[in-house]
Length: 378
Ligand code: SF4
Ligand code: SF4
Ligand code: SF4
Image (cartoon, rainbow, N blue to C red; front, side):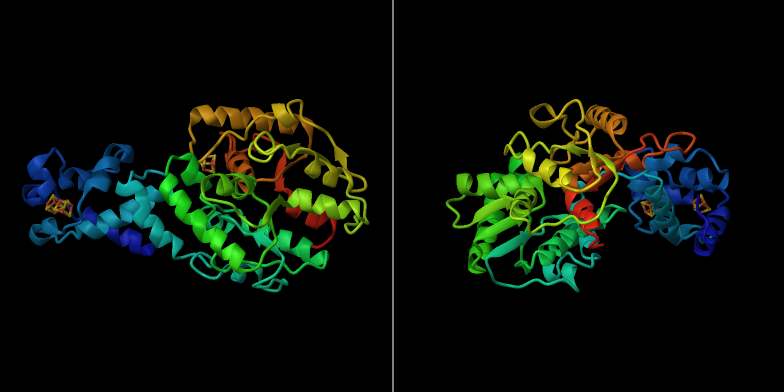
């Protein structure tokens, strides 16, 4: 409910309403529908069920016509604005036109990273603008904007490990989204625009190898760019494969016991799509003291995290629940190599039961962060 001082004064303002109905007589919406500002005001004054007025609160044009004739000088638009703030917090929103893109553009501009050079994410770490090995940041800065957890940590921890190996990766300041979701949601024209931009920038930086920590980015850059846009003259490799190759030549050295019971989620794009199954497992198993247990469904038969390209509903939620239960029954920690798998599982983990206890007793973590911890880099 509305609480702050300002909010209370708004409620006091609406409490002056004595239901004369003059607002309704002038309201442009009331002329063409059964919308009535008086009913909204009454709902608040009499403290009735707010669910009944959700649509009306979002329909109000905040045009202020009613305020010009209200005998009690109720500031109706301001009242509506405060109520919306409260509704938004409670998840009582509405569907904005054009997929909400214009509000989202505003939100994006509040980010510390979005719209700024990608290098801002890596302050204190060693990166460069040109060179052989590029680390693909992907969409983690965008995810940080929406979710409570930080996803840029995945990027920072990966660069931390690369620095530990003596590698100063190239970071593209003007890297753009790889276009994965556009491609799989049918927007091939815009996918190609993003792909062409990224290919040009990667090649301009003189890069020979692109390393990704995103399963979707990996597939998109390695398979879909050459397939749909034209040949690329750089290699694309997943971070787990890259690091495993360094493990084999003993450049990665886990020195300390790390006594955790863990399991691994094969992201669909890295596993079934690209057949990368063993590299992440080999890295995890090489840590002293680790107790690695496979979930019953693994590798080719691994269950999806339950969301693809933001198609999220109760049906897909049941898949996530099924998979998280399987992970919970197998280990204490579920390691993933896709930021989106982590996000979709974390979303479910954040849900509380009626008695506010957690439903699942398993931590979900990305491989880079897990390895950075095992190497005592963080
Ligand atoms: S005009 Fe003012 S006092 Fe009259 S019903 Fe509308 S909000 Fe209430
Ligand atoms: S501010 Fe809302 S309630 Fe008042 S006249 Fe405009 S549309 Fe109607
Ligand atoms: S599970 Fe659905 S709601 Fe949760 S983060 Fe993923 S897409 Fe968003």
